[in-house]
Amino acid sequence: MDGSCKGVLAALVVVAGLAAFGSGYQIIEGPKNATVRAGQEARFNCTVSRGWSLIMWALNGTVVLSVTPMGVIITSNRFTSENYTEGDDFTSEMIIHDVQLSDAGHIKCSLQNSGREGSAFLSVQVVGKLLVPTDSLVVIEDEPCNVTCRAVGWIPLPELSWEIGVPVTDSSFHSVLVPDDPASVLSILALTPRGSGNLTCVAEMKGLQARDSRTINLTVAPPHLESSSLRKSADVETNQETFEPKLKNGNENYGYSAESASPPAKSPGSSLPAQPQPSNRPPPSSRPPQQEPDLHQQAPTSRPHVSFYTVGPRITRNVTLV
Image (cartoon, rainbow, N blue to C red; front, side, top):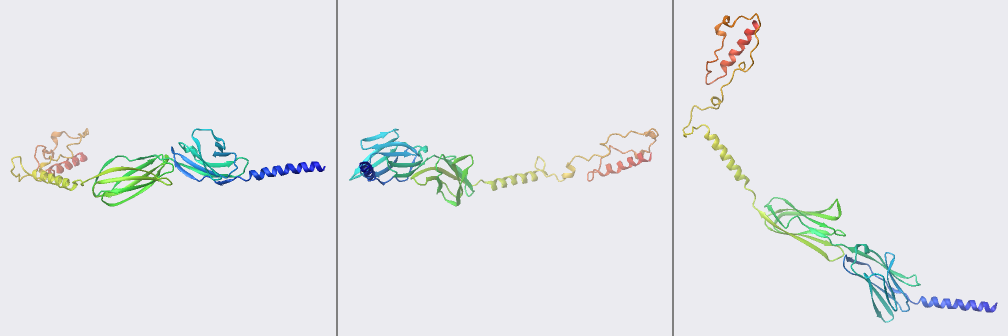
């Protein structure tokens, strides 16, 4: 029994020694957060103390690179490593080449047979396009106008601003999201120009020195001569009114009047269809001559309608009596 106890005790001492030896190495400094543009490189450092046997790099929970004292185990050409030694400390630098938007996430550096790890977060930004409707624009002086600029395919959305290189009475701008495209933002510049020059739309992304711009050449034209055109129209109308009372030879027609120039008025009864006569109506020859209107008589020039309206009622009254 005593021998068995001594054997177990010796085994426990060895295990404890190995654990103590293993606990001697640790992560001195883990990776730090990084923000990169899509298509560029991302670099992360992990520094460990002497005694390590295996360093593992994981992206979003998947091991993409392993480093041993004998060399580097590469699983993908997009993930490589560079190593540095300083004293008793060893630094493994993982390099992600041609970073993709899908690479965004958690980066971990861990040691084999150790619960210690260092972690960081990779942010990936995408620089899209900056669009303007036209490179040159013609507007009217001192008339308000709007100029637009649209950023498309940016992640995250950039900040849009304007550099105004023209004299203006006033100007302001605001940005709005495009409903059918979450990765797009539209900036609207409202201004009242007083001269020609350049307008520059600028897009800047937070976290990176990413900047893009588009310039619009603004040409200011003088206002339309609307008042002059109106005066010309008024002059034409006045000349026409003055010309109407004159004959073609230029002599004044003193007998002209708007009433006499109009067509002669017709009798209200003359335009109506003939009324059927009753059977007991006397023949037309028996009617008094004075009842027959003289349709060939020309009405006076001053009041051409008087004679026609006096005859009509009498004829109607005779029919009623019959």
